[in-house]
Image 1 (cartoon, rainbow, N blue to C red):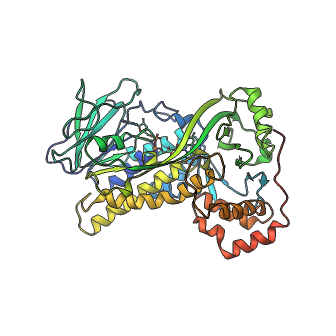
Image 2 (tube, rainbow, N blue to C red):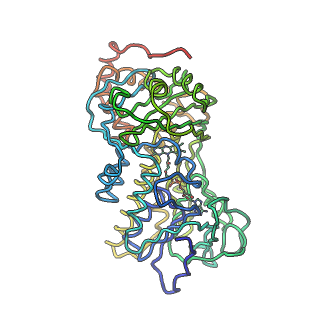
Length: 484
Ligand SMILES: Cc1cc2nc3c(=O)[nH]c(=O)nc-3n(C[C@H](O)[C@H](O)[C@H](O)COP(=O)(O)OP(=O)(O)OC[C@H]3O[C@@H](n4cnc5c(N)ncnc54)[C@H](O)[C@@H]3O)c2cc1C
């Protein structure tokens, strides 16, 4: 696995290369495997044989939840995947029936909803996805190989491969100036070119694709950023049956006036991941007493109760996430042929909404659909402006989670980002909606179905829901707050 592959034969026109073996890269490889004879996934990290956090994915130590739509998407890409995950110890839960949700301080009325989410660590999800991808004919995952940039035709109109170098330890970044037909660093020791007729960049939030394109003479995609300044502190605890009254998790969602929150997910029957987070200048402490004091300021008792009574299994780990960032490749007038970008490299979301793995898997489904359509129409792989078609379709996939995450963040007056003229009205309605969901379980179910990307956000504004909000508003109490 550690060696750099020999260059493919010049006649081989059916090789796709994926940069990054995270969730986006692996799911993209799944999509490509149906259309390309060979798919090579390259990662600069040492990829652990067992589920374990790794250096190139710093968020792998932080709490993760797999949203209902993401679970469906992974099952669609890898039939039987969810059963496999459960057999390995992951948990599944009815999000409204088996977890407590606090929205604007109101406890959302618990009731069975059919919105099913999965609790598993990020390394656990990646481990099982990677095993499925490695089992596909023609797919190879290579570790400790760093991609330095794309290689193109002399005209720089399409990719012909990637330049790589071996890495000893998975550390460091690619960088430097380009030369004709190359983006990234100038040639160095141990470098090689891996020929490919399609390259998919799934290298995460630190993607250098915008710089690579610029070095090749292409416009840089416009970027939309919404600054949230999220600080996460995750710690794991032994889960016992009496904890949380047997419920599987809790989410305490921050709101204007209290930009701090927390969550608990059962990663296994006997293990909780507990996160505390703050936005826009709020920072949870990472020591035991400080974490408890912070949890006690949240509007529900659940997280504090677990911190007080459960046995810690490791040390708390802190991580900072500055801003949601969306790169508008779909708006570019000119694309480098055979070069796609997916996952966090295309759009990364404030992690408190839990959307990244779902959006990555949905983008892989989009790619698979486009390639299947090409095949059905007898079009050759990647022909007919695949980048343009992919970026447009991927943008449509990203629109909803972006609306939910960036729109949610813009509720906070301190959050930097562009606001629309109707945002104030919508915000006032949704504030009433959240309060009303504490008495009307139908409103809670729809809210969670939207948050889990099973239903479009417009559903929250349907006439039936507006009526329910009006009816329930009178019965809903004020926000439940503890003293900070
Ligand atoms: C704190 C935090 C919490 C989160 N919680 C959730 C959650 O609850 N639910 C959810 O769905 N999502 C969550 N996410 C998001 C989620 O982790 C990602 O969106 C998802 O894993 C997809 O990431 P990716 O594959 O695009 O990128 P990454 O996971 O960052 O993977 C990129 C890969 O590319 C490799 N790489 C980078 N550069 C190179 C190079 N030049 N050459 C070779 N390899 C390279 C890296 O080693 C890495 O393996 C969270 C994110 C954060 C930051």
